[in-house]
Length: 136
Image (tube, rainbow, N blue to C red; front, side):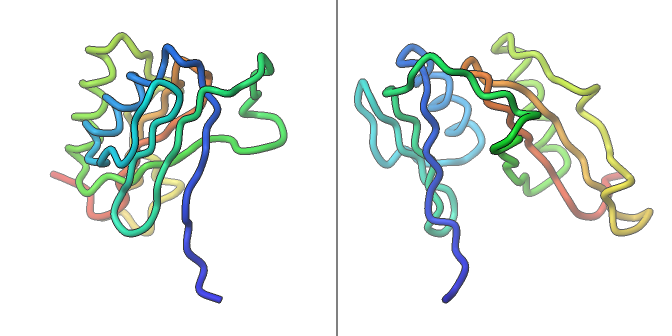
């Protein structure tokens, strides 16, 4: 079997669908389905993210059992900064003293793991991360 990630579904509040659509299209994802109850976005390849408005009132604790966060890769270190600027303009707080380099996750001194972390309106923890050669 070839290990491929097909899709991930997030249960969200109906009022927050626009947040995910705006954020992910800014990050380069394409809308493949949208109505008042569901939003589907496609990344490169076959991976898709789905946001569905059929959630109950239970909130996920990202430090508890289950998924901690969703990491979205960036093609360049500057893309992480662009995402940070976009989120700040939307009034979204960046978490954990980000943006920042994480040398403990880097392959060498010439490489970087450069990230931002933030929480969506539905308390889903996201990361936008660049891994590669450190920009000057």
